[in-house]
Image 1 (cartoon, rainbow, N blue to C red):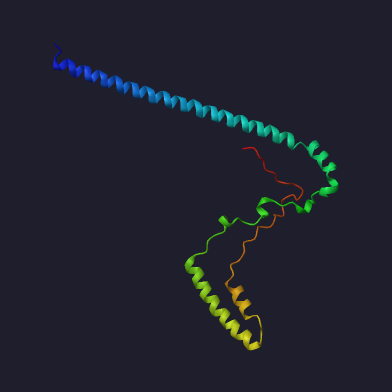
Image 2: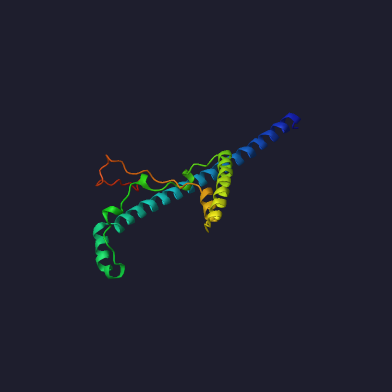
Length: 166
């Protein structure tokens, strides 16, 4: 003698229980994944700490000095000259830092350079110069950026050093 309303309520209750169970199951799976990821992160941090400790041991000056003495005949190492050291600002620019020339200026200067090199080539060929093509190639070449010279006020004995640490 179940009424229709009772059957509908039993169906809704069963569906709600099924949905609740699936949500709970998914949450447990996500929690397991979080624990797994935390364990991986801890393992990676421990590995990094171990590698830092190993690097500290490997790069100890007294150990390196012993190695240099042991393998000096094979390696023929020499001390670095003080004139061989440069500041970072004295190094040439990276390709990514080189300014890109404006297309219209490049075309105009290339056209002007072609006309000028053509005139120079005719003059050079009239004079009997064998290097007319070399003059044309140098007229089209882009200037190479050079590092800025050291300032007069800087102390040449000071060396700027960087740190490996973050």
